[in-house]
Length: 256
Figure 1 (tube, one colour):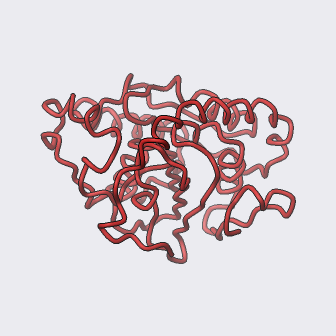
Figure 2 (cartoon, one colour):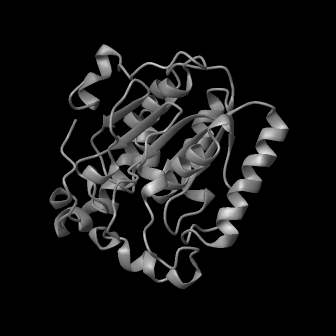
């Protein structure tokens, strides 16, 4: 387990920040190049999956991921709430209504995937409604960050603070606490937006951290991330085990 001392949670350096989006374009190129390989990933039981976008992003940002998971047989859904400008009353209430809608439609628990700020929402949903959530996967989500100024996205987040239900104050308590459902926290030490140390969880029999190479802005279409997501979703309900990559792919996952 990596140290998560407060002093370690400083925002990424300027070089990582300036290169993050160009590197994300490279991640997308790798996604296109590895499409056939990715379709060999484990397949599960076609349960429903809800995908939540990051700050200022909308469902369009998660379209490649959702399309890929549909090809593996899952019932994948976007949040249908427009652009993510932070925890406004409309978005918070809307996520609850969306979850109710999908539970009624499918009649079974959902897995929830959240990218960046979307992952903080995903963990909060699992904390508040564990009986409705099968598993949680977060992608570069700084759920352990208590000081928003330590993020390169802080000024953007604060632009909409007057509309947030918490007045723009970061309330990470409910999202950072342990979950009662299996969870995987994906992170990259080359994250140019948030401290990677703020994105890792306290490991437990049902909680793991998974490091990949890549950018923050490319996590949603990073081939190593997508393979890992497919592997996590493919586990039969109630039989969760930590991720073990195939031997030929281990170099994509540092420390594995």
